[in-house]
Every structure is written in structure tokens, then in C-alpha cells.
Amino acid sequence: MTSKSDVKKLVETETERLGFTMQLANGRWLITNPENGRTGEIPLQAMGRGLDNYKTKIRSLLHDHPTKPSPMVAATDLATEKANPMPRDTWWTVETLLEGARANGIKPYASGGILHTPGPIEAQSYADMLHAREAEVIAHLTRTTATTKGEPAVPTIGESAHVIRKPRDVAADAEALWGLLREEARKQGDKPLTNGNVPGVQWCGALSDIIKTACPDWDTLHEKDVRQYLNRTEHTRCHRPRVTPPVWWIALKWNNGDLTVTRTAPKPEPQPSAATAPASAAAPPAAAGPALQALISFEKAIQKAEQRTATAERERDEARRERDKFRQDREDARAEVDELRVELDQVRGELNAINAVFARINGSAS
Image 1 (cartoon, one colour):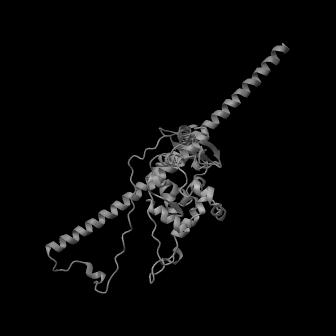
Image 2: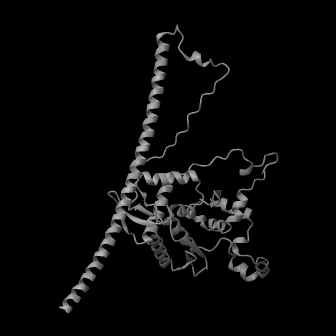
Image 3: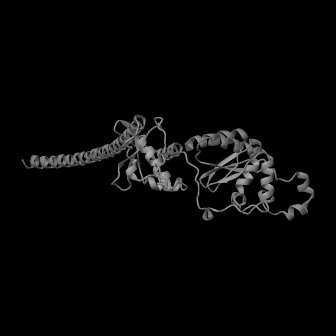
């Protein structure tokens, strides 16, 4: 995730070069071209190729809006102007706007309730108009009515027996969440904090609240995967979970150590069929040849190896949990010792002050 300072620097450089004006309004940078009155909004932060997209959007303000009437029409045809009192972006119907956008290379689609408009830079103005009417465009793109006679209607989620979700990139989402936490730690002063020998900073807050606010589309399983990824790659650690709000350790730099995320499907249970022999027949027949006996022995050895592997994995996971608990208890104890040292220094200071007062009293009395 790009910091706010990088976005601000980009906006200042481009607006100064192009002669535009900029101001901060409603948590976004409002860019205005004084020559044609076109405006654009730039968020305070960017992810991925956000800076390149923002630069393209600012430059697109140089050109007039594609639906802006020509000077001749605006000057001679007053009746047309009165008949269209709506803003420029709403002169066209959604169908006409989509046709014009597609004809210019824009390929709009809706995913997860968000409108996406990939296409060439030259057609940026069409993308701006689509996003200005995002709710209407998404509703049009996701209509479930049949477009061809005899074609069945597309079922909605409520009518579908099975919903297939597109897999998300756990590593990318984990890095984005870590970037949010680093930014929050900066706002709190970037107080140094170490996790063992790994340097980092302190952040006080509830991680679930950050995820709920910044990533509302994550389901419970994906949130668990992302948090586990950050924990195992040593990017976050709950330093003091028993205080309110909890104190977290956040790594200074991102380094996933080339960790990959894999999921294995559970092995299906074998289903007996009508032709399957009873369990007692699983033993090798008395007349089994050497090849069959060797195959059966090999299968049993594989089963035993799988059982030993599963047991070793359970023991390894348990050892890791015990190690993490020990580390957390050690860090909590260190923090409590630090607090006690501070209190002890305060008591010593007060005791020295009291002794000094008594010394002055004794000296004056003698």
C-alpha cells in the first residue's frame, strides 16, 4: 500500500505541471481543471498500481467531457439545452452509455458489488461516466432477465443450490492489511517494540475492527487465513492481549520469506458398493501369490507411514502453540517488569525527597 505522502506528492506535481487546482474535501483530493471546469477525485491512499492510475485520471481532465455539447449547438439551439436540464453524465441512458464505452474499448463488469472498467487510457472519460453512475450500471450488468427467447433466466444467489466463490490471494491481502497496520502505528508515533530479536513498532487497537472497516467483504475463513499468514511470517504478534485496547507488535518491513499458501481437500471416505466383499474377505486368500502378498504388505506400510506423519504433524502443531504461548508469556512478564521498574524508580525518588526534608529538619534543629 502506498502512503498518503506519496499520493499527495503525485497530486501536487501533476496539478502544478498542468495548471490545475487541488483541495482536500471529504477525505479525498479534489482536482479541478479551470479551463473546462472538469473535476476528479483522488483517494488519499493507493494500492498496487494506484499511482499510475491516479496520474492517468488527472491527465484525463485536460480533455472536454465526451457528452459536452459543441459551442455552436450550445449557442444556437437553446431549446435543446432547456430540454436537457440534467447533468452531462445523465444525458445518455445506461444502455447507450455502455454501448459507447464498449465501442471505445472499455470492458465493464461487476464483481463483488464493485464496478470494474478496464480499457485504454484514451477512453478514460467513458470510464469516469460509468463510475459516476455506478449503481445504475451495476444494476444493468447484473440483471437476471433472459436476453434470448427460450433462454432460461440466470438464477440469483438465493435460488442457487451451490455458490462457487473465486479464491482470494491470501498473501496479497495479508500484505495490504500489514500496510494498514503500519500506517496506524505511524499515527500513534511509531514507538519501537521488538518481538524476540525482530525489530518492529507498537500499535494499540483491535485488529478485528480494522478488518471489519477496511475489508468488509472478507468472510470468516479468509480472515482467519490472512491473520494466520501474518502470524506465521512474523509480521504481527499480539504483545499484550489482556489490556484494553490490546498492544500489538508490527514488523517494520514486509518479508514473507517465500511462504506459500496451500490447501488440501479432505480424503473422501471409501463407500462400500454392492459388489464389495465383506470386511473379513479383506485378508489375503490362502492361495495368494507372492506378488499379491507383497502388494498388500506395501499398502499396510503406506497406511502406517501416513498415521505416523499425521501424529508427527499434530505434535509439531502442539509444540508450536506451546512455543508461541511461552513467547507471549515471556513478553508479558518483560512488560510487567518494565512497569515495576518505573514504579520502583518513582518510589526511590519520593524516598530521596523525604530523606532530604528530614535531613534539613535535623540540621536546623541542631
